[in-house]
Image (cartoon, rainbow, N blue to C red; front, side, top):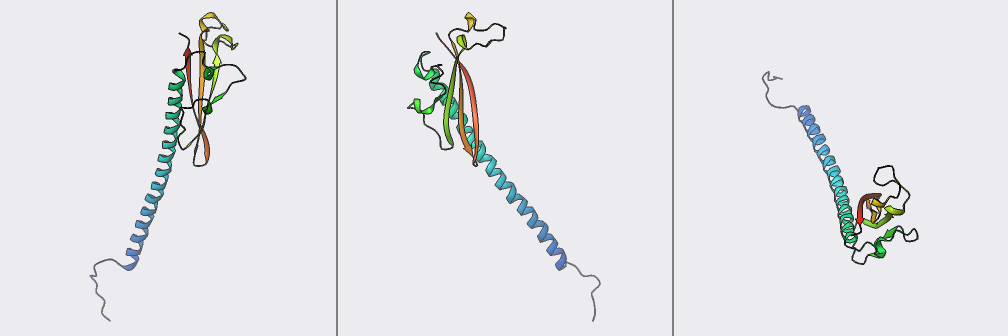
Length: 151
């Protein structure tokens, strides 16, 4: 049998190795795509929760200082989304709650000057809005704080 000494081309082993390397590359791209889709969905849910928090803040800012939805009485705190008829919860958002603290009667130094419940803290309420949402079966929260000032 006469063997050719100057054979050209690829052997079957070389082709199989190239196919395996190519397959590993494609599988890693597939995995990266799945992770990217999950991260994108999580960011979408977080954005919806942040928008819901912003909408809630805007609606609460429009209320009067002594409105019942901004009542700082312990019996009414925390408030929830059922109190505001115009609040619509996005799909991933499970609830929106807010707690109201009247700075003039909370017993703390709110403005950092070492004085508790002083006159310059009167007519101010701190509102802490918390949006609870679910992303990939994990409960998460977005929190926003703002001051409501009596004019």
